[in-house]
Image (cartoon, rainbow over all chains, first blue to last red; front, side):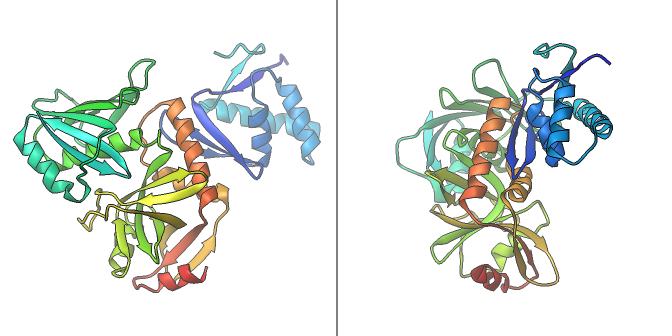
Length: 96
Length: 265
């Protein structure tokens, strides 16, 4: 499976409260809130960190096995990509 | 061209127009907010065809280029707001109070971000020299709370302005009214609490966390611009605001007893 590099959309503003992110989208002022696991993924999505490293972080911080974490992180990244919150590239810093 | 100066939340705007009906409209509608001081902003108003094709209530605010300049269109007006020069202009289809008020609400929602203030869908009342913000969408009880508080000073029953300075929040009266059809007082008071309103069978208040507060507050912030820079500033002000004042969910029924719950909290 080729590596992927998620990056937060630059047109959103966000903050983390008690380990949970609140994301405000400029385009339509919609508000998204993430749970603790989602927030780890979100904070790591800097366009330079590969998905495999994000999965490792999730495994380190939460009681979850690797296979489950891989499925959950991939599904979550895809969900945020469809919402326009994340962009995903095949190489580091390739996201516009 | 006649100038009338109004000040809302301390932000003075000179309104310049050749239309005598508009001058009279401003003097009447904003009479509690007329101000003799030197203006920070200038708004030029014309009346005539606006050429907009949008439906009456559909507001579009878009950034025009790299500078912080916004184009604002609705069926009954078309205007611009330039944050750099602190100048705005608008063409109103006619000297209509509703159109002018709507444009001013948008203008102030943009202009006040620089002053670290937000325009919020909330009633606000001053009691014992402190302001309380009652936040909620239409039907949540903003006007009802104002009606049930004859001993309090009304700042607004619909759109309030809260400003952050040195970690302290102040709530300002506005001329932007709701069902009450009465302007608030032109005064400010330290913000004692933010209450997220909903009707219930009894009066009850429960503290909410900063995260819950920001989730409840942001949908009530008057904010139109599809602009990442401004969005980030609005989020930062909102975050400071929920840190600066105690935030709670307030369930209330139709009597003034909710003030006892607030006083006890």
